[in-house]
Length: 528
Picture 1 (cartoon, rainbow, N blue to C red):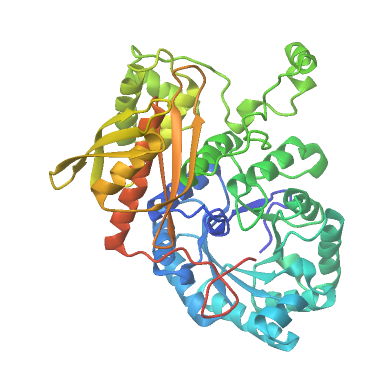
Picture 2: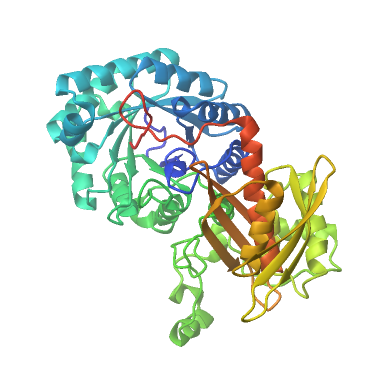
């Protein structure tokens, strides 16, 4: 059914499905649930929680979100076959509002090279898939994968057929980021002219950013009549990514006079949600990223600064507060109390449970003893790390390192095991960090391949907290660890141990590796 308000654009978030398919962006079930709750607070209309048929782990994550996240429609993706649709429905059915999203490729390229199916076979499979999904769930979305490269006449034929079969939303994806804004608007114009009953469904867009036009294409389609945008936080997703949720939301808000449209997004939650995703995945937001990048509201040019002092609108088309970015600098120190910390956290756009607030307050006091001044970034980092670390058998009790120019570096770690053992081990290496990593590997008996190691300053000043992020490879699967500390070597050791703990914990759980979808019914790689 079309949105009751024709000026309302539905925001369909696929961070947990398409976004997670981006290399390096896999999330654990608790991380997915945490992000899903943040998306609900952000005000998204639909959460595509995953692809339940991809793995048992995916199914369980979708089911947990369906049961515990309230507000948005919870959606599960499925190919046009009964097994996929059954799994999707069984995972989402406990949500008060739920949707099944079925897809099937329609372009000549996909028909010939991927599916080996004729047009009539595609048409039949699409209709059968929608009809079966409709028998289970009133809210059914259909996506003709690679719609932007599908012949318009055949695309209109497929869309007409799935509408008749019961689809309530029809999404026309630019699966490979190939189209342009003018072409895409013409595609929607063609469908509106040639598809019977199109006024009875919501038209949706799902754009990839291969040519850097995902947001422009999405807005062009909206201008042409689409009323749902499928997007992700920070624009993460397959290859070059997806349409960025924060950019679309702020474009529609900032240019409401042009578009005459609005969303239900609580824009002051954009920056906190962006930072949460970045923390969970370890993928840093580029400084020059629109809306949520560090430079989005920074002004260094003298001319710009002069204009800003006269009036903010000279060089800012939106205020940082509009997206949840505070411009307050240092406010707290070691003498600040729990109430002051709670208020500051709230000002930054975060809500914490009593248990997480207690943990943050403990960490805050420990950090305040090491730093003279605490900035918003310090507080934010503590909040984002609250309750995030994976439990594991080992904890770092102490670390000693030695490094002298021209000499071999060394490190000694003291690790405590949950069974009561305490083990000290030394190692040498190319530097103190390398030595610490080798010592940890020796104690835990877990050798890994270091894929990437990143260090960044969380705030400013000589005593700034450093964030270390490590990605390791073990048995052909990637694991990530992250940690904060004023001592970057200690942060690195904690991050590396966190990755090791994830490996040791996953051995007993035996969770299947993240699977990608494909049109082949025996494998799973989806890219509507």
